[in-house]
Image (tube, rainbow, N blue to C red; front, side):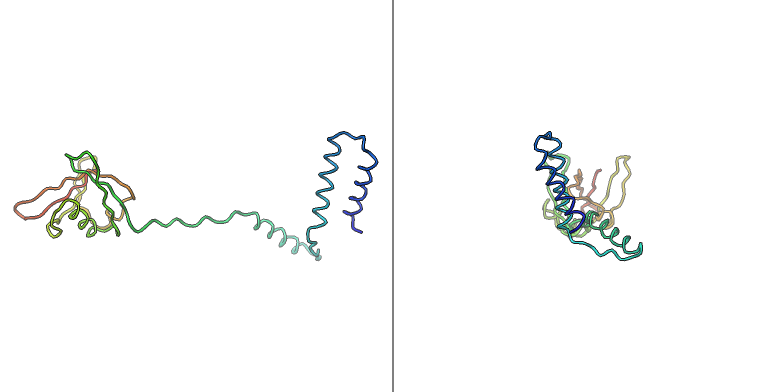
Length: 167
């Protein structure tokens, strides 16, 4: 008979003999006996000599309490941006399957009925008024659901359209 079972039988004898105890004492005895029962039912680990076994079992317990790692969030390969010309009240959505300048050119051409081969230059106008020539890296930096005001102008001399994104 183990120490836990001796203590458990002693506690049950105490509860039988002291039916006149307060509810708080009975609850304490009941929770103690439940804890001892749970301890007796748990698998017993062999206690080998040496502190290394104790450390390894403690290490295993620490790892079991550690929360699972969160999966890395992958950004989708597509980006949806919203564009609006100065006279428009409502934004139009452009879904870029790949955030590149060529895909942006195709989407703008189809949305605004412009021949694709005539859209040649893309610019970005900053809040300070700087005009910057756009390249693929700038388009890759678009976040999903970014919104822009755009100006589309036709250059008669060159026969091309220029698109300016106003931030």
